Amino acid sequence: MVLKVNDKAPDFCLNSTSGKKFQLSKDAANRPILLYFYPKDFTPGCTKEACSFRDNFDLFKKLDVDVVGISTDSVKQHLRFKDTHQLPFELLSDVTGQVCRAYNALIPVLNISKRITYLLDSDHRIAATYSDLFGAERHIQKMLVSVQQL
Picture 1 (cartoon, helix red, strand yellow):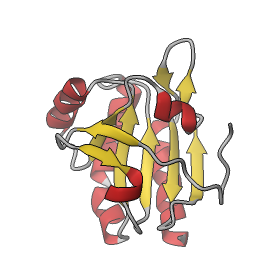
Picture 2 (cartoon, one colour):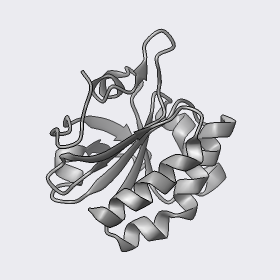
Picture 3 (cartoon, helix red, strand yellow):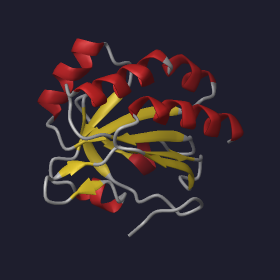
């Protein structure tokens, strides 16, 4: 299923680097949130993307938008990645690929996530989306523009 602007985002519950389960409808209730799906911790493109979100994190916070990264890596791997790159946002572990699949963000044969970013409004409707496997830094640029229009 392809998700489009104005579609209601699927709810989900995943393990988080906070040590708790993150449920979209509960932990981001009535708040806009940026969900960025990415293939693999510690790969060059994913590291560049995560660090770009880190470097622009204050801009998203000033605009009252939470940022959450999601991949099929384990929480243990996410914790190392988060610590190594001093990421100020949570990373969620979708080891089964179920949430990635629901967001049309799974590369099936490899069971890893595509690089796709969703901006959800406070009702968790899709306000913007951007997909580019090789343009990691463009995700941040596109989402900053979209957030300012939200």
